[in-house]
Image (cartoon, rainbow, N blue to C red; front, side, top):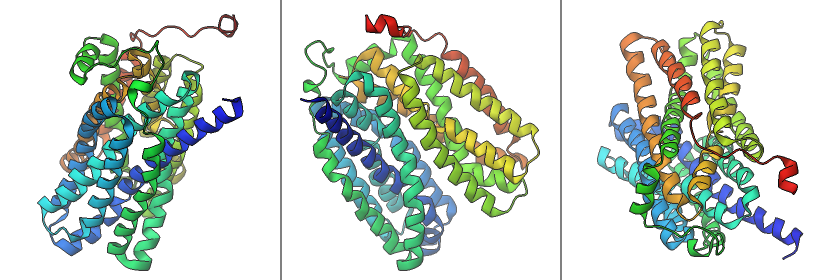
Length: 406
């Protein structure tokens, strides 16, 4: 295959993987817009509806190790196909659910579960197997940016549709939009036994692979760091509007803060994908967590003006999910691509457990104290801890350019 054709093949794979993440994650991230109409329609109360959303957050993480294990065994295509259909069906039937159990089924089990099956663990593993190793870092960065791109593009579209055709029609239009990613399942269908060539490590059973990984101290440290990432991300995504309101700023500053958080996450994801091939991944992760902790500390000390809030949102956006490319890269580096979907899925599960705690603790602390300050203090301590625990991870130094050329 010529170099131009090989490059085109790589971009087709990346377009399929990132495009799938744009649609599945983008539709999932628009669900918050429908919370108030669902409450008005069902009369269940925000507590019951929020329970379905919180369960979806956790279920998205729980699904990924199992989806990864299946993808490692039968190939990514079937898993992605099932996941996209589950997102579409769950989103489409949500307006017809009038009970908490129905919302748990539609939003949680089907919608979030399908998004987990067509989520980063399976998508990044599929792409990593199908492209040259030297391009894997940038590939994971591009795929990771797809999630924020989906939020950035689909949230305004969903809002416009709600005005034009009503919230029920808008939600069902979002469901149908997900079906556009079905052809990507065929592009990414490659069976794991075909990946990596004769020299690639053999694929282990899920239980054996997980057991081997959990015995590795570096893998455990990596998972602990990703738990902290989940805490940070979920707290910001859930409570940033409340933080802005607590600063005494008008509502529009909260909207702009969320927009900058998503926009700069795209920048951070792509930039980290570029950096992964140039510096050691554990060092990049320590830098990201240290930057988060310093940004939070400076934010607490600074006057709470609109520009300060926007600058803080931009900085946190750059670090928001830029941890994903080096984390996925280290999993692949430690264990090879054969079981990557399973093992990265396990790390994603720790991320979502942290996310559940971050979202819950933010509300609990504010309800108890009337302030988010103690959550920010915990945030700084966790960021410092995450920056430090990545340092003992055993990762070989990158070869110097002259040695690589030789």
